Length: 313
Length: 266
View 1 (cartoon, each protein chain N blue to C red):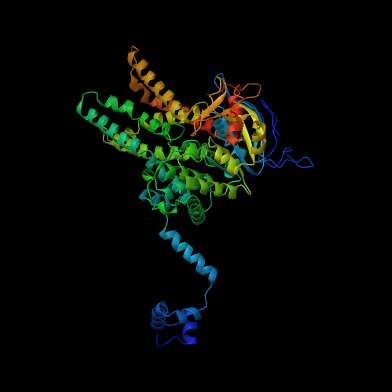
View 2 (view 1 turned 45 degrees about the vertical axis):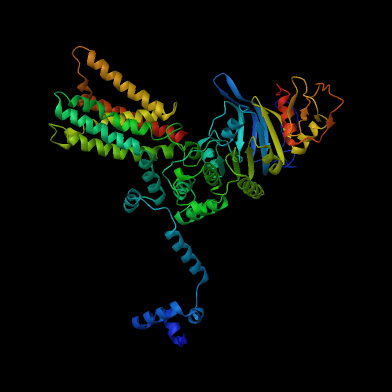
């Protein structure tokens, strides 16, 4: 299902968001979520249900992705509306603690204590996550380090790690305790192509039983991983559906042609000198001689969706 | 290997009934003889557990002296880890505390009425430490730790304890080194104001970030000193006289009660 402007949305399992007997299977349920910073509304009436699987969160900078992630991660209180995470209310302290026991969160810019070792830092986070006695906790830390390929660097100081390694360290911290809800904010920043493939493998594996929310600008990651895409703009959900549904909306609106299109139409120059042109609904593309329709990619569809509100050139 | 342990010898060794000489001899032989090791009855689960324990001992983060000390006095291992990690996170603050106290002491010894500076500085030293112990902007890994189950009051109080204890110890030592101080009681003039200000900071943190709460309380302290300093017939040292100490004790009790109620009703 899809729609424009603050629509009520379905679950990653399907559009219904519940079972026949009326009980909900959603790990995340959000109704009319509002979060304001002063007079500015970063989130403006978000409705959302999420079940198991990977959901991609797309949107421009400032669209509200990180604010939404932080609200779901219990890091930020909502100004209005209702949030239920793993069936609990994050506004209540005891329920918030219970949510945090079952939650993994990778913030957008994770930072660490530089003089800690990799093992020491993850062990510290594992203590904060109440992951059992020392042996059990250490085993869990080792498992997380192996999953992100940092085991060989376990005794290295954090300050000696590269940017990509630090990103994997943040991911390992999020994975501790096998969370039921995993919130990953720009997780592939700084990862090389090989590591990104490993990351996708890992997230696919986790999504079998967990709910994963992936906020990213990397459309390829969304294409590869997500069964469902949410697009945010100015704090509102402007699209909610599968990647195929988003692509379908762009069919017949993506062209390649020899001349540069007029102002107001998103386009870019290709290596062969031709232009790829994304024509928004209702706009005209006057170059009818040389243009050839092409199958849209997810990126085209996303650009058309967001470009319709102030296009690029 | 030209010889092997007999069935009886193996049985006695496994049952721990062999005499010392036989046991040592059997152990030395078993180290080199896979055939005899194969005959030795083993508890696979126990062996796996033992290897895992051994691996864990060899391959775990090195525990520092503070963590070992805290564990040895009976603190739970995870609590000891959290407490021990905190001063590591605030090394710069600890260093600054030592330097500030050393400077205030020097002034107290070298300048006439120099002890006034020490008296007005030392109560805010624990406050600054606590204000910088927890929260976004002062904790580099706050974005990671703030969404863990221990985040919130539990981590705040653990960090407060971890900062407060060394701060109080350093301030006590410094106060004992003051000129004209002869008893521990005389050296403790700053303690109740310091604890009351820390409690005030923690209480205010319900409505604002901890660091800001510390700033507000610290500013209130400076303002009070200033007002007492310019008021005729009043002396800032009144803040430490017996009547004021009673007032500090009452304030501390009330603030501690307010914090307790807040934690219980959260």
